[in-house]
Length: 418
Image (cartoon, rainbow, N blue to C red; front, side, top):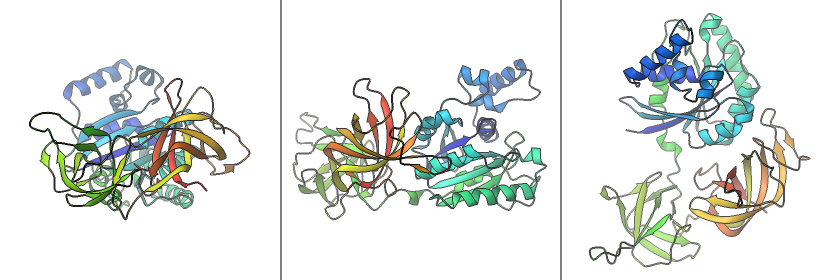
């Protein structure tokens, strides 16, 4: 079955954890002992009904404070699709958690409280979803039961959000009125919203078209490992293992190896289940070539007439993740891009972006924790990249502090800097 990764985001008390708990409960994706534990915990807390948010707020601090402070991953499946949920925190000080949790998502759910409407954090979450190039965005207008399931109130929120979203690059935008606490329009259509003509949230998740979201045009295969078994049975075996980052590879395809520029042809594609007729993102495979080339970890196989940009100078948007220190021009880091590791110098911080107003602050000389800005980088070795808007795999990277070995920034490549 097809896998859909989706992330949830919203302000405190908008009901993210309750919504996920409702999805798990109503789709019968939790065990009896889990439900029993939640019921017991709800009773100890003096609640009149089962608090389904406890299914996802797994950290003790979250249970005590009643907020989500970390990214909680959950898995469930229906007969139509498999799902991985990233329940991301809503506080501004946990922006980095949302960035990391949503970076691999196919779809994002931004929750709004129907009473509060579109607030500052709603705009920030929508902007981050747009920045991360998440193809599908669902605006879940929650707590409709507290506004008497008002169609007028729902339409007001839709109109206001569309006005802000027009400034962003969002391809697919869907609005769903629901009540996570009562279960309205979560798994099944609700009779409380007869004016709503759309589908339930779960039906949308099961049917949203995601197969065309992946880049199947630009063949990109970053080499992770060279397989040389050195056994009598496989004495002449030389395969290049990795995960397809874009496009389609087939036996017989002409390929070029970067950075050497040597060309060859795909002889075979192996997987854990045997030889394949084709491989596409995000499949993990081993590619065998007809010629023995000097190819190693960090190199990339692509098509001779469809190559990525090869450059040491990169323009990128970065989210600063470190609590110790700030990003400033002149700083040096280790850089990890696909399977390639190199070192990078921050040549320039062009501006800091206010994610709430979209204002560009060109006077600010540093990036602090959770701040996002545009930088120019110079690497010691060339990178093989595409713009992030074209390929999220070959257009993203991380910066690593060479002393602590901590990841301090996540970056999205805009292009080659001039």
